[in-house]
Length: 170
Image (tube, rainbow, N blue to C red; front, top):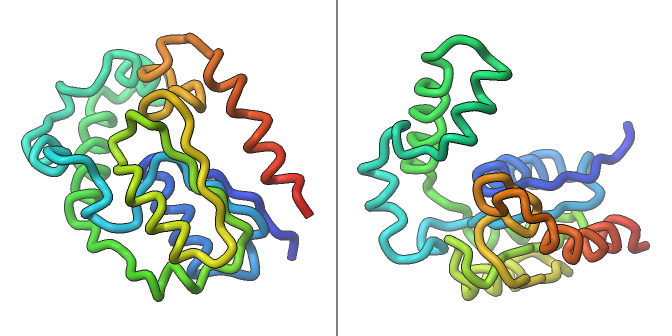
């Protein structure tokens, strides 16, 4: 079975980490971008903000993108509830669990991210042989995430060669 290279951003990073822990033989390279492995990895106030958030708080760019993919106006609400509940009930992973990851791993954070920089260091210490990259910016602009970058792709263009290098390293 071929091995996969996986990039998980934000909540998708949880999926990527889970995949790498559950199916280590399937994941060759792993990039965890702006994601946390434990609840204490978030900046102060994040969990209170999420607890009180509604789908009305989502950026308009997300609403428009969802409607293009799914014309059901209730889809975004359902998606928001599922995603926020997944985050709010996420128990976190132990260093021992993270230590089971065998994929070559790069953890990427922005210096103004919602993930604490110190948490990135903790993740890298727990995942064998992993590396940490901290880029200037905020949550996702270094990947070209529309709400964060507002269409300015300069940070993404500067970051992309490092991500590709991780995928190409032998």
